[in-house]
Image (cartoon, rainbow, N blue to C red; front, side):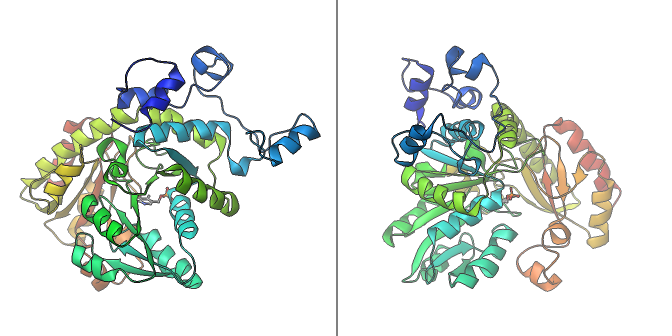
Length: 412
Ligand SMILES: *Cc1c(COP(=O)(O)O)cnc(C)c1O
């Protein structure tokens, strides 16, 4: 059972037992605190967009009550807005978290969390195949404030243990990672963290709360770039941090200072996207798995990286801690750089671009799109081969996507 289920029942006034399912939460959770029918604001079925920057007071007594903490209400948009609060409640219900806070982007969520949790002289251990900008944030920003970071190879728990220092406070990891879809053993990381009294932060963007719920493993905070599957339509940018109330609330104070809050209109788009998130994700899981199986047997494919395949180095961990393997398939084409370019240009359905997780399939060439600032040798040393392709499977028919792949592979 997910945490927060009881809250949800109380909200919808149900006396059913704790069993409320994921798809139902995606549609209804968080929407019951208004004044109208079944808690809908102004009787509106869909959530209204509270498009305002400020919230006004009846009189000076109301101001006084607010500043003295005698009334709970909003005052200014940077500290939150009602549409955003509904999106946060919905996300918390999906992740099984006590609390959630939304940010203007995934990177705003990552940077605000790390700045909030670490101070000068402290240290964090991070997996080496983390999101490029997260690594740059450590190397360029945290370093300026004398906050150290050690990068360790995802999956090497001895190296992780050795990297822990006296001043280490947190372990940060993604799972699965980008673009090789390495899966870290959450039980192993949490056990190490407990021994050393560290907090664990997992960027679970690639997994989503449908496929993996790190809080159930004892992880302290989960981060998602909601730009990807949660929004799901390649039309918004958002990030979310989820966990227990005290920790999330401490990070919320930093959000108020650093300013990366989600705007009301975007919160509405996110709520709209979340309603169909379980449907989209289930289909993307299924289509990506079918694509991975097709690619694995194709003579022009050298290597496929998909945690659902028995050939993936972390397949067993993935089966133990995930219920689906996601909508991204990475693979190496058995050709050279030119051949890979011809293959990418030969695909007729997916567009070439960064990002993933939306309804439209997107294909990306990590060595030119995400790792262009590294020298070729450095790229290859971290496994970013010239022939590596990352395919984000949308909600098109899998048969069409696979036929398109077959056609593009025939031309190289
Ligand atoms: C995209 C992404 C981010 C950054 O999110 P934005 O919404 O683009 O700022 C962080 N982590 C992972 C794993 C991502 O895929």
